Length: 287
Image (cartoon, rainbow, N blue to C red; front, side, top):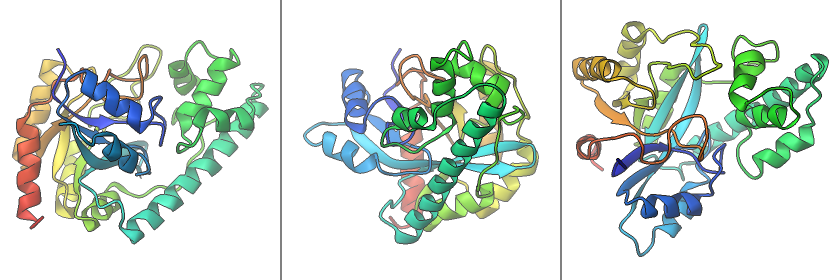
């Protein structure tokens, strides 16, 4: 079953395999009504996606996904309806993207020291015009035959506890929520439960009872409850938590490309009521 709503999708502006225009084409082909472009630390995919929807019924929500840091793990914050033309917002994103490049270079150097010489030029070629991320390093490792899959690259080498992992400049979750809110956007907590893929470790789980009160105070509006690998029990638990904190239950495929790390576009069923609830929150802010 293909959902009519997908609020988590990536393009070649970051680490997706489809251009914004191709993503829009696929969404139309599958009969989606609303998608959100949520590239990592960049909004470069929004304008071309909006142009590609002209003359169609597809609605594209201007979004972002920001990686943030807490002790022992990462937290990803999604932004919906962001004003991507906001100057201060873009300045912060530039700093985040530059830190990604520096981190990837240092990872390549560590991998070389570990006997896995990945060429930096190849990482750049894989990233293309998009924001450089660990998936591009993982793909380079896979192409050289050092791992059997990009997932294994994360599990063994470039995941948080891997020997080639390198930290980078990140915001705290609270800072990311406030940054998104400063553009009159709506912030949502992404994939709050970590479901391991084959060959990957679960890693540290997010302590929602510790984190959510802080984020709600900072302006958090939603939380992903519909996501790849979530069982009915996980989804229900997250729905209960979302209700308790008055958060909009959101969701999506986290689409990067066919055969990618997560679900296919439109594969995760997200109720249309999610859009109505987000629109209502926008209305409360006077937009």
